[in-house]
Image 1 (cartoon, one colour):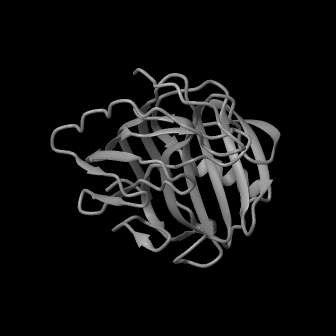
Image 2: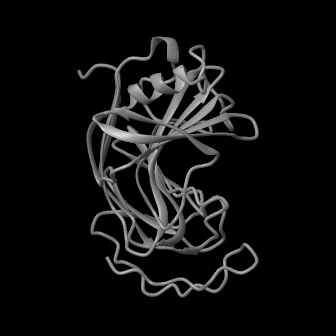
Image 3: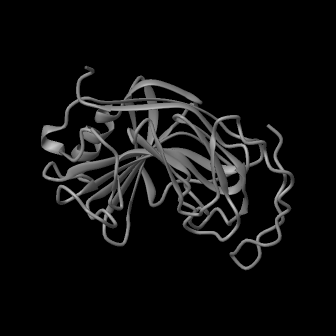
Amino acid sequence: MRHVLACASLAGAEACVPQGPSIAVPPGSTDNCDPFGTVDVNDKEYVVQNNEWNSDRQQCVAVLGTAFILTKAQFSMPTDGPPATYPAIFKGCHWGNCTRNSGMPVQVAALPAVTSSWTVSVPQSAAYDVGYDLWFNREASTGGQPNGAELMVWPDHGGGVQPAGAQVATVTLADAAWDVWKGPMESWTYIAYVRQTPTDALVDLDLRSFVSDAVARGAIDKSWYLIAIEAGFEIWRGGKGFATHSFSALVGARQ
């Protein structure tokens, strides 16, 4: 995919960025340009969210089933700060918006198998991560910011971005080597796993193995609850053309 280069950032904020033409909305899709807009998928088995939480530039996301593509977006944020946006698909509860029959909340001490398959494509010359975001709360539900832990899994990243905190280890999980990063947040703990060999396709990824490793490292308490599985793109530079082609997540045994 072609990428429209951004202007330089100015004083830590987004400067002038040429938008270029929008990508055509796929036939039959739902296009959403609300910064915090959501689209229910498969009778709310999943929800796709724009989640443009750190920018005022227009972002549009076209949704067709569990697939979505950024049809209009162009960001230019410094990579030593937070990303502009995190468009994602999720199962579970995000700030009180809950999907149906998700298998969550579920206490970590009783966590069943948690697997996910995900295929993506990313534009060139961007600064980003392709990231799962698993949220844990100290109670079974929350209408706001979870207060337990945030566990990220990065199958891919580019443009010089890195997780919060510092690298503390390297571990082999799900038949791959991952660098482990840890760092404190305002009211929750943070741990991230960065795949040493990037990939754009995951099949039946064993997410429970990452949770178990995070418990062993003291980042997650077994009394806490897994409340959401999110998968999307944290974007610092670029935007248009990021795409999820298919996604699934399962908590518990297959029916």
